[in-house]
Amino acid sequence: MQASEVSRAVAVALSVASSLGLPADDAIVLQDSNRLTLRLLPCDVLVRVAPVAHQGAQFEVELAQRLAESGCPVAALEPRVEPRVHERDGFAVTLWTYYAPVTPREISPADYAGALQQLHAGMRGIDVPTPRFTDRVERAQQLVANRDHTPALAEADRELLGHTLRTLRRVTGERGGAEQLLHGEPHPGNVLTTKSGLLFTDLETCCRGPVEFDLAHAPEEVGEHYPGVDRDLLRACRILVLAMITTWRWDRGDQLPDGRRLGTEWLSQIRAELDRDGSDSQG
Image 1 (cartoon, rainbow, N blue to C red):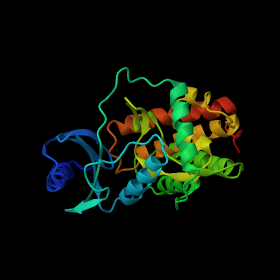
Image 2 (cartoon, rainbow, N blue to C red):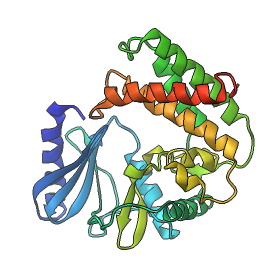
Image 3 (tube, rainbow, N blue to C red):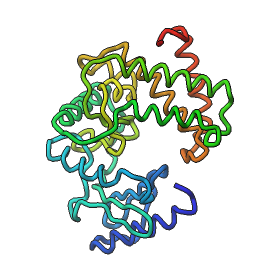
């Protein structure tokens, strides 16, 4: 979120919580990216604030409710208020349960895989309209092709990302096999270690695709504990996901701290991965 918007977003979050009867005098910023994640005190509520134009809040609230009702390991909405999106002063605000960090916070690959498998099982029973994972790849391709939005991306790097996204989108999209509702980005940053076990957050990125696409966001060891994985597809998905998140880092509007440095490192990693297999082996 733009720095000029952060103070307004915090004020809106405090105002919404107070209007709902939750004592909120202070806000601690937990994450600042495309939306702001806050811990409000003394009510101890987690609040997500995003510009109204940033779509996904209503979908996330409704999906979180359905998944929780199915017993899936997802973060819960704040139980003291009505589960809904609050729009105020150009922002969309949602309220969630705050989970105090549990130590040790390191997640074992087996536990990670088990929780993701449980999430996927619950998601198979839910029918909601979502984009296919290849639609997200296409958006990355469009960003690479738009020099106005990625002005700092060198031409050789632009060609690398464009070729990788194009080739692996085709390979993974045409491979066949079962597809289902996915989390979309179940990376460690979207996994909470709680007293109740592992819980997944940030459901706005849900899409349809093979489970390997979700596993590609998790540490490599997690895939070794997930049954029935197509290893070749998982490897292709890992490089594809790496190309996608690298592309986001070169967006002139990217707000991830240290994002440009990460983008540079990941470009080198993509080259290394492709060189290891042979640059055309995925095609």
